[in-house]
Image (cartoon, rainbow, N blue to C red; front, side, top):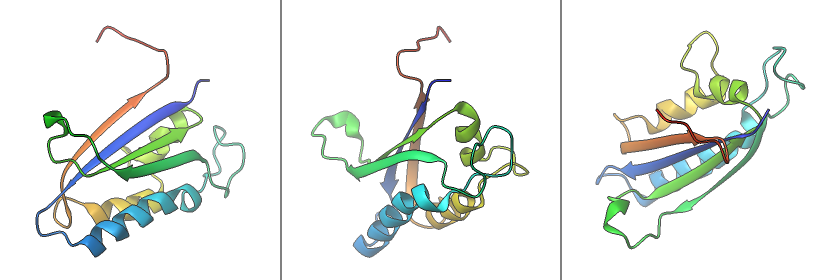
Length: 127
C-alpha cells in the first residue's frame, strides 16, 4: 500500500497571539510521538507511534493565493487506514491525541480557517 500525504494549512484569527501560534505549532509537531497505534489489524505495532513523519513551517509564499494562511503541515501516513484513524471521522475509531489537538485549534479558539488535502503520490483520478 502506498503512503498517504496529508496537508493541513491554518489561517489564525486576528486575535491569536504569537504564543498561541507557537503552542499550536509545537502541539501539532508533537502528534508524531503522541499518536499511538490502536490494537487493530491494520497497525503493526499497537501502542507505538504510527505517523511516518510530520514537517511544518510558516507559509512564506508571496503569491496572492496564499490567502492569509500562516502555518503549513505535511503529515505522512503509511496507509489510508492510518490516516482515517488519525482524522477520526468515525468518533468510535479516532485517535485520542489528535482529537484533543483539534479541540486546541478549533474554530472557536485560535484558528479562523483550515485547508486540508490528502493525496497518494503519482495517483490521479477524475472526480
